[in-house]
Image (cartoon, helix red, strand yellow):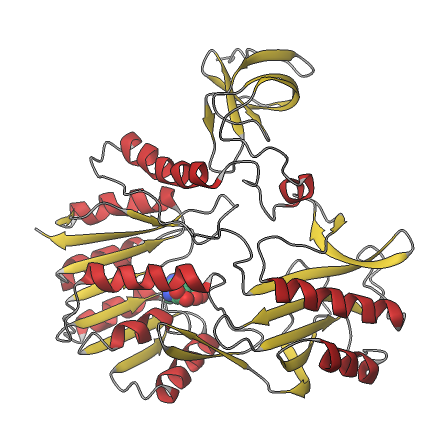
Length: 455
Ligand code: SAH
C-alpha cells in the first residue's frame, strides 16, 4: 500500500505547535502526520519550512513566529540550544518541570496504566549544577579553542561559560586552554589524526571542593608537560590531582584506559548523604550531586527502611545507593557489570566502615537467578538500570524472590512504563505517585522513581 505523505520538502506551513517531543522538538501536525520543528514550543503559531520528509514524519525549520509561548525564555543563548548543553534552554524552568512530568503521564496513558505522576522535583538554582565536564580541544581560525560540539556533528563551538557546570570548572578549563595557547601545544586534529591534546576533563567535588584535571592525549607525548602542570597548580583553586589519560583510538569515547598521575593524588573525594566516595578518572559518578541526594533520599523513604530489611541493589555502579541504604538496612547486596566499579564499591564500603554491604561483579539478570537459587530472600529490590531498562529475567527473578517492595529508578520513561507493566503481571502494584526528579535541568533527560508493593 502506498502511504500518502501530506507534505513535501520545501513546503511552507503555518500552524499551531501541538506538542513537545522527548527530544525537545516542537510538533506540528498535518492530518495526524507529525512534522518535528526544533526550537518551536507548544501553543506557538509558526511558519515553518519542511526540510526533510520520511514515510512517518518530517523535519521542519521555523521561518518566523506568529505568536510566542508565555513559557518561552526571552533571549536564550543560541549556542546552548545548538550544542546540546541546554536543549531546553528556551523553555522557562517551571515549564521544563511540567514537560518532564507530562512525558511520563502521556506514556502511562498510552499504555492504559492509571498511575499518578507527582510534580517534578526541581532545583532552586537549575544551572551550574554539573560536577564534571569533558570538553574537546581544537584548533579553529588560528587558535586553540575549547567548547562543545554542535548537535549531531563534530564541529566545535567555542564556549567559555558552559552555564550548567560548576563555575570553578569553567574557570579551570579556561586556565588550561590559555596555558595550551601560551606554550603552543598542538590540539588534536580529528581528520588528520595528528596533534597532541584531544580533550580536557575536569571534576570538582561539590562538598570537598577538590579538583581533578585530566589531560587526554593522543599518544604518550605531552609537550611542555612541566610548564603546563606548574601553571595549573599555580592557578586552579582547589587543585588536588592532575592526570594524563592516553586515548590513541580515533573514536567518540573520550577517555582511554591508561592513566598517569602527573601531579598530586590519583583520585579525588566527595560525599553523598554523608558517605565519602573515592573518584578516579574512569569512575562513573553522578553528575548532579544535589539532586542525586534528593533522589536517593526519596528511594530510602519510599522503601520504608527501618534497619531490619535485606536489600538488593541491582545495577549498583560504585555502590552509591547501596552504601546510602546500608545505614538503614540489615544487609545490602549490590551487583554491577563493570568490574572496576565493584572494586570502587568495595573500597568505598571499607573506607566508610560499612560492613553490611556485599558487592558482586555480574549481570543483574544472571546474579538475581543465582541469589534466588541460594535462597536469598530480599525485602526490597532497588533497580537503577541504563536506558534500555530491565532484562526480562530480572523481572522474572524478582517475581520469584517476591520482595515486599521494589524501587525503580529510571532514566528512560519509555522503558520504565514497559517494565512496570511486566511487574504488574508478577503481582506488583504501584502504591505511590511516580516521582520525577530533575537530575539534568535545561536538558530533556527525565529521571524518576517508582515504588511497587506486592498485593
Ligand atoms: N546506581 C548507580 C549506577 C546506575 S547507572 C548510581 O546511581 O550511581 C547503571 C549501571 O548499570 C551502570 O553502572 C552500568 O555499568 C550497569 N549495568 C549495565 N548493564 C548491566 C547489567 N546487565 N547488569 C548489571 N549492571 C549493569
